Amino acid sequence: MNGSPSQHRDEPQDENLGLDLVSQVARSSRAERSSRPKRWIFALVGLVIVVVLALVTFSLLNGDTKASQATKSDDAITEVIDLSSGGQAAISTSKQENALGVELTALPPLDDSEQYVVWAVHEEGGISVVSKTSGEDAKGGLSPIDDVVAVHITVEGSEIPASPSEETEASVDLPLGQSDKPNE
Image 1 (cartoon, one colour):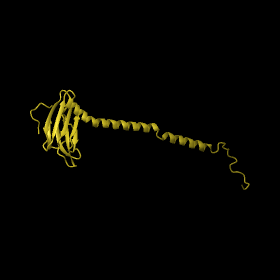
Image 2 (cartoon, one colour):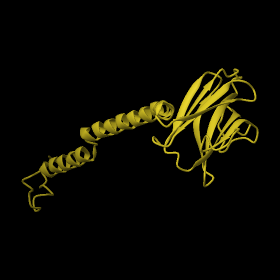
Image 3 (tube, one colour):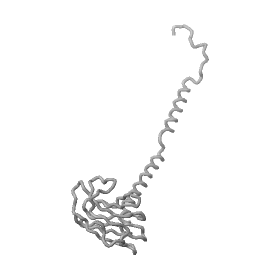
Image 4 (spheres, one colour):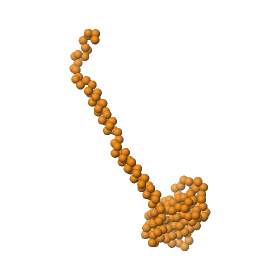
């Protein structure tokens, strides 16, 4: 403005002054939009969560079904045993249903830090928890039982250990009906 010639007069003039900045911003906003998760991903995750919860609920409710299969089958064999601290356990097996059912009744209540646990001992040394309760009547079941060789009932702490404690409330060898008297 002081009358001096423009210093930029010899430089070529860019007719798209500022438009390159606009296109740069447009490209970066497209990149941001494409990096944002799509709504269908949220719907898919929600669907997966619902399916997993349904499967967990079904498996929790299925324990009673397995117990019913073993006790109500035409070929069911049931053995009722007294627990050493009181109460009874009715253990049923069915070859036809390939199922084991356990019903604990008349149990003396335990304090909050203990619970009754019914264990299935497998041939190769594996162990499954069939049922647990703090003293209320309980039912549980297991299927298949091809490799189950014994059932142990123990009193454990509030956290279930990896294997049953040495002191059992009752033990029964499977298959039922093979011996005259259960191991207690």
